[in-house]
Length: 268
Image 1 (tube, rainbow, N blue to C red):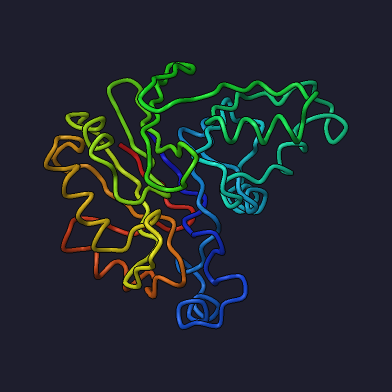
Image 2: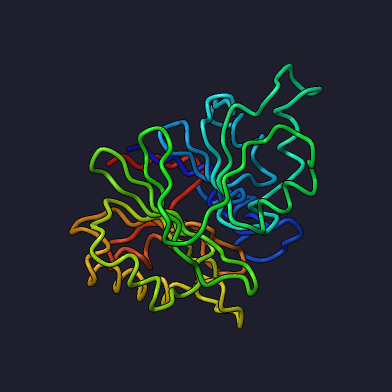
């Protein structure tokens, strides 16, 4: 299985849209891995995770085409993950297509937003629920519940195929005991997990700082959710978290974790 991280930034990216902080200014000067667009990923070139406002520039940066997708999976309805206006460009009159060419898998909140925006458009929607497995072209995909937005069942996603399995966990917050239980003994080969708050924890419980992220990963390892030696990569970093890419590498290294960057490819 191959996972390409198209974006590894939080809702305002790095450098932050209007940011004049140390991390944003460092990214403007040094660029490279410190430039982060809004979080998104692509599995085996065909399964797209989230559709944020940076999707077009991500595709162009990596020489990819949306026409190769067979499915689009949404984690939740926040606008950095769900940019509704981007869906219309896959259909007539923008292109000569009668359907999108891919199925959308999403929670109730995302499906409602899509149906309200495009009530008569030919969009194939599958409503997803936590701890229910969905089959798509040889993949099994199981959403588990994140601790993120009150009033919405936000999803992290377990993908499995041909004996390989992977958890994409952005906007997680610290998992509930029920979610830890749902993931126990899965023997995942890789994990991409958010570390939004860096070393500057905010009062918001829907994101994690480095300490919380390390603790959650530790519990996943202890429970057998992660197999021994499983790759652990962080994403959804923010300038407000206070760490450059090199600083993230240093602080995560003792825990056998490493920070993701835009364009990073993980294979297992």
